[in-house]
Image 1 (cartoon, rainbow, N blue to C red):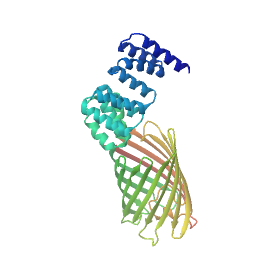
Image 2: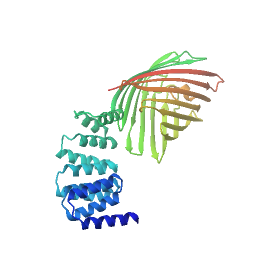
Image 3: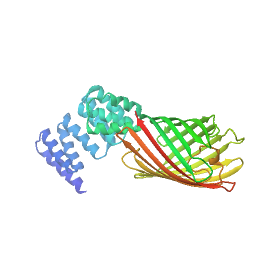
Image 4: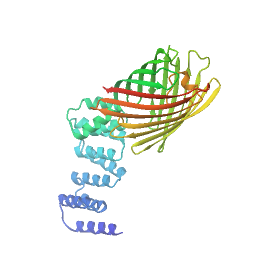
Length: 398
């Protein structure tokens, strides 16, 4: 009530006195600086009654509406301003601000493209277009547009680095060594892989391994389609001519983001050369992001040669500076924990595993990782053993 009375008194006072448009604008700015938006609007209303065509009063009135969060009224006034002042820089700027503050990324892309058609060299308009492309997850277009920009600023560099994290090509190598307390000579695995990281990512890899005193090579491809903001997928296909790797590996998974939770459901089929029956695995998971942490629980139901088993896994990841800088803990208990390279790893009574991984981004282009793990395994024959594994990896962002 007090604000309404104040606005009324201000209006009457300004109507009773002779003021030029600059005086109204100055008074409105003073009130707005104190966040007295209603009072500032009252002053501008009176000023526009006297000077209805004044550009500065009209544009500042729009700013007041946007600061107050009244975007629908703001866009109406912006359209009227641009109708009377075509290709007006401040009008285009206000249109961009409206879309930016309201997080209307599709609208921001349209408004920046319209603004750049009139002011092609404006760096702020370019920055906002890049921001729109990034938030729309149109990373390929964002990267192409970024390559055309010659001017640099701290904001542009930061945004460019963020886009590069989410859209790039990557090649890498990794190697693992597993030592057993009983029965087996050490296992050695080496992998070369190519990744295309983007809105929908692709991973192609070739793995050479020595296990059970035999050598073998397997090839694997994984695709991560993104169907919408809240729905992603995973499709995997692999093959090998060696008996130490699955002859055929096919899997798929869907992940849905529901409020603050991430839910997944998937399955996998494995076929081995020396086994008449394959292995079927079904998984369901539940994950959640907590500030700099990601926690994910998964249950694996496996059927191998008419034998059924259940495995529980837990992943806890702590992020630091970026998505490649983290510490990750994996825990598993059941018949098929953590990884499946050969038939023996899905034909156990049970196994318990723990694995710790550290990943870091070096020189903005090199991703290094090291993993240390241990696994206790029990078999139907009564045998049991402990496996210790170390894995190192290097990847280059291109």
